[in-house]
Each structure stands twice: as structure tokens, then as C-alpha cells.
Length: 146
Image (cartoon, rainbow, N blue to C red; front, side):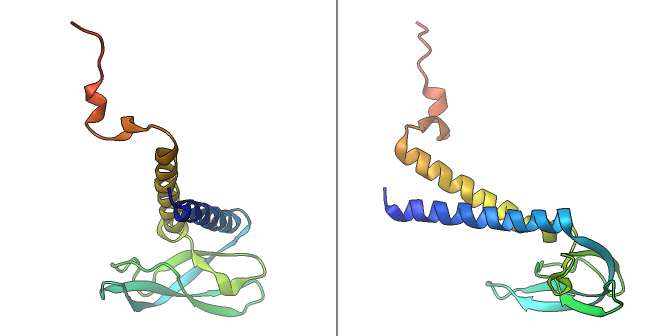
């Protein structure tokens, strides 16, 4: 097995742990506020399709207004202009705010976890006999019947 598989496995694992820890910090210690969607910013995906991210305005404890564009873009418009959304940011970092919803908070950790599981099975398969994971082979077991 190539060393690159191990490097990819370690990299995906470390990146997923870092993203998961960052999400945990946002959920555990973040300040939640109401924000207002003031626009939808259009981005282009890799396949040259339109993706949309909400542009949100909120006011912090000091009364200062902040505007940010959510880092998660979707192929559909999740919000309409004027919608009130819950945002979260770390106490001294209002410029790093995110929309507090399932898509924004859980997409990256879930995708990372899928890659980690994939590379884990690739690494385990190279070190052990895991033929039972292959479809169709589980039915060819000799049970000792005449």
C-alpha cells in the first residue's frame, strides 16, 4: 500500500477533528443573536451552477452593526430577504459569525467524517482480510449443510 493513502487518512482525520472542534466551540461557547437576511449572494460552483449564501446583518452587545455572508452556499435559496435567522459567533469575534442552522453547522463535519470512514476502511482493508464487506461474498459462506 502506498504511503500516500496513510497521509491522506491522517490529513482527513486531522482536518475533520479540527472542523468538528471548531463547530463544537461555536455551539458550546458561541453567542446567539437574531440577524436579518439583507440579501442573497450568488456564487458559482465547480460545475458552473449558481449557489446562494445569505447575507446577514446583526447588532452586537456594543450596538455595532455587522454584516457577513454565510460560508455555506446551497443550490437553492434557503432564506428570503427580510427573514430573521439565528446567528452564532464567539464572544470576541463577531466578524466570524455563521448562520446557526443544520446546513451551516453540520455539513463540513459530516463530509469530513465520510472521508475519514472511507480512508479507514481502505487502510484496514489493506492490512486485514475484510472480504465480508464486499457485496455478494457474504452469501458464499459454507455452513456445513449436506
